[in-house]
Length: 264
Image 1 (cartoon, rainbow, N blue to C red):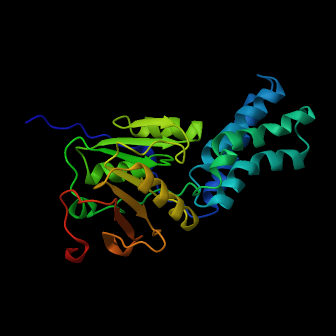
Image 2 (cartoon, rainbow, N blue to C red):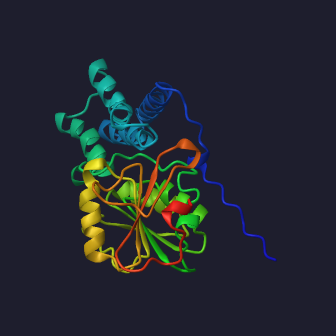
Image 3 (cartoon, helix red, strand yellow):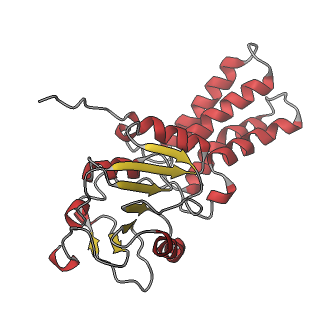
């Protein structure tokens, strides 16, 4: 037997630091980078690199407002200090970086909330997928959903779609065994997938269900973490360890091999 190599994911192993420690550490790191670059590069370049450090660190914050504080803390403190000798247009750099990581057309979708480690435990008992089945994480962010899907479906062909370029690149680095591409989950074609997984918003679920019904084949599956499709009857509702509920919906026709909801 050939042992499978163990891959350690540094991002998933990082401890959850109490607020506001993540912000303080990010701001300190940005200031250290900015001060360290003084006299070595032009001031605008120092501002860009330091702002990039804060913006990159913002993806580790919990919730939109905390991410915003982490990303904007350094440029705001620099502006208030009066220590920067850069042209006025350079202050657009933090905004440009934020829009790169969090594009405007992605703000209508769910914030960057990672799928908890064992949130999908028991899903393979509710829905048994054949080897090589295509499974899509629609709006994969940093890849936590793909990691959770791999734990329950190690033999599936996992794919992710993400609009933000930096998040797509980070997700591809974390999940090299998955196919991760840049795209809009609402314009992506869901036909050909045995399962589509979402961690969206309550307001998005009716739209997601309509898209799944229109594009996915009979006997395929729509899985939503935390939020149900309004007015629809799920095939199964899971809630491992009292965490977020997992709502499982079957697209019309006969289901693939699975246990009925009542048996779970």
